[in-house]
Length: 584
Image (tube, rainbow, N blue to C red; front, top):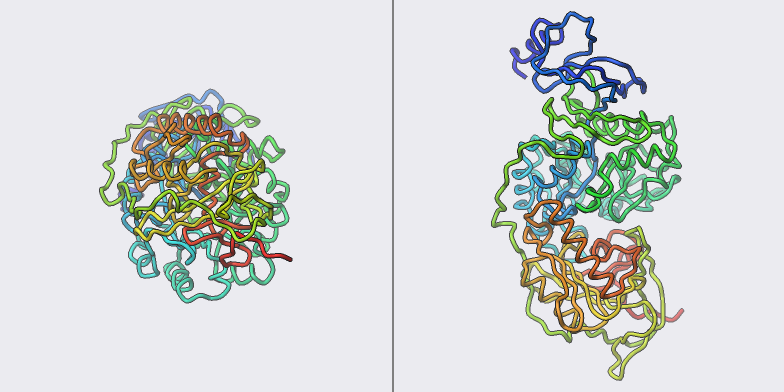
């Protein structure tokens, strides 16, 4: 800060010069004292400079807005999000979440970095520069997420070192390789030390980790975890000095379960996040404002809920210039009418009016997609017979879906075999699932069985496949699975539904096979259509998101079992297993 800027802020606070903006007749949410007070609020140079009333001798501001008694809260902060999961670019993502009152996000770009490496990070940094939405990043720690799959890139400590000093890089992204931490793997420690030695935050990812394993995981300063599922787990993570993120996304719905463990003694260590949230979910339900409404609806004090979404987040990530309505803090704020049903009416960032009644007002320039992140579909040629699953036994492991969760169950079932010893469909809700490597043309195809999806008569495929983002395809016959993959190769990435050898519907995701260069509404409409086609034509269960659920089946860091391009992986045993189940 220059001396002249500081002087002007002080002069505006003292009333020696007029403020840029005065919001009159507010009910201000005080997140420090957890109370509400009535006041006018003054803004100068994009910062709050003071409180006052019509009787105070301040010069008239350059602009005055009457809040008509509405509540004023700090702008909301999402503490862990993958923008790529919205399926739109950062500029379009800003247009989606700003009207919801989200003014800052902490993004982990490990989706695009797993495809494109530092080129992906650079695209996300550059395309999010100068938006009304403040976008901060955590450099991905797990590219690839594990050594048990092929990703498009590898980021070592030396790679992280190259970007750790960027002003919008807050630290190291979620350390999904918790086994690597516990075993003091040299490469993992090197990455942690880059963050530690630069005074940066390390994010966690430790589902069901407890006891001495959690001691080892947290001892190196891993500060957060968004993978808690129960109140007991929340309290255990808090006991270990971590912040716990109450997640409510498109697939993972942990918030209400975790709220059972939140009270006035520990709420300061709780945060809100969306993690993976599609454009349609945001348009239909909101963003962090939805987390707040759900928490209040479940009995949490509204001011505490707002504090979790603002001050707690700023404290965790050392964003001390925001998160509260107080002199010197950045003038990001939300006006709304009711504490019982918090729905943003007006949204401001740095004192600029950027949304009103759900409409995005800011002028956001389009950003060109870098050639370095386009397409990214390098699949070695193969035939449909690669999807034939030959088995030595009809007693098999299945990846069983748990609706509303990315956790799966390792189930054992009996299936039918044809005359060649290959799996064939019976009346049970079991289909084939495969992961096709798409980055290096290795020809790798992992093949297993998938239960609880409901699919009949075709195949669905997606190039969004957490976290290495190979092609994931599920189907009940090899021919349709093959055609679905070929359609994605033709598009340069996206999603496809195939039945009877015909493409019924497909969606293009040309940015790294993860995002479309379209508006949030266009993408939401396309995803709605393809989901409806998948459900209607292929009978996918209504409680299962056809593509969001499928894309997590290739994430080999969340229990119980998953599938990668190298085969069926048991997360608890941390090893590959045969599809056939051994006799006990």
